[in-house]
Image (cartoon, rainbow, N blue to C red; front, side):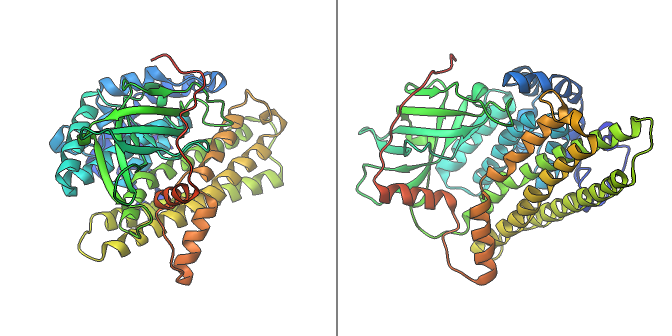
Amino acid sequence: MTEHVLSSGTTPPGPATEFDAPVTEAGRVLLERIAEHLPRIRATAAENDRAARFPTETFDAFRKEGLMGATVPAELGGLGVDRLFDVGVALQYVAQADASTALALHLQFSRGLTLGYEWRHGAANARALAERMMRMMVAGDAVMCSGIKDHHSAVTTLTPDGSGGWLLSGRKTLVSMAPIGTHFFINARTDGTDEPPRLVSPVVRSDTPGFTVLNDWDGLGMRASGTMDIVFDNCPVPAEDVMVRDVVGARNDKVLAGQTVSSVSMLGLYVGVAQAAYDLAVGTLARRSAAPQAAARTLVAELDARLYMVRSTLGSALTVVDALNADLSGDLDERGRRMMRHFQRAKLTVNQMAPAIVNDCLTLVGGASFTGAHPLSRLYRDIRAGGFMQPYAYVDGVDFLSAQALGIERDNNYMSTWAARSTSSGNSADPSRRTPMSR
């Protein structure tokens, strides 16, 4: 599966449903430049996984070469990769070498895509903030992390500081790429104002007083992704660094478009892990002196067909979502629901079939794969992460898809429903800390 990566544009891309090559010139440039780093990523993946060590050197190289601004519009100096399909293809090749690196890179790529929309279509404050952040991404001065999920002990709130700015308090969990993050986009709600609480997206610099990254990651998989908790203890946030969203609990399905854009390409990561497992298992069988038994050959054929089904499903979904993403002419609520529905159909398929593919690859290789040092062990653990990723985790995804099919009215914005539950429960932020990382 490397011919398109190494061909320098000489191999024509296949149909979109094959999900193996970019569909734009910008995407091909990105993939060719990423390909130069794949040997090093692959060579260090196992040791980084064992030590739960983030691959800082790889990302330093990405920053120096401008790859961290790949999805920033060309008008602002980026590579201008704006197709979700192309981003997904790039991530699946990185994931074949190391899923943890692909997960962290996804965060940067998705931020460029969503900020690009804010720059073109947002309010004046959002446009200015988006442009400032994206220019820093291109220069290698901004590594963007996202803090979405509140820790169970805290609700993340933004309160007025009395002088026109804000104070952020709370705690976020499962924040990937945190060891090298310079700017953290946080999902929070307002508190302490005379108005109903609103969803807000403050941007917090890593050197902000009261900000701490906790050195607490010991994950089952994605061990080198730098996925940690972050804590805010009355962190000052200037008003110009806050994007104000909807009132908590307000029904707004338009936002599903942005949530789709920010996350759907990540499915390419799990296709890459499944592909890597298949290549490894089939290569192991081919090197054995004895011909494979009939049952093993049957399983290889079934794996080949299932992998084709996964790749085709995702390629088709990304093609449709890209088309919907480019069209702002109709009902934007309906557009958001359609984009999310295609995303969730593909996500449910990938999250169910890709782990099954990796599991059957262990069966093909046999007992040798049931050791911590075997590469299939890492792939098996990494592939499990997909089911926990929002939007949506499995239960929320089932609720969404079934509600769409049955015509059940519901609030589809998972960030709004989280904030509404925290507001009604009366929880307050608890910036409790464990051992902080030195920064």
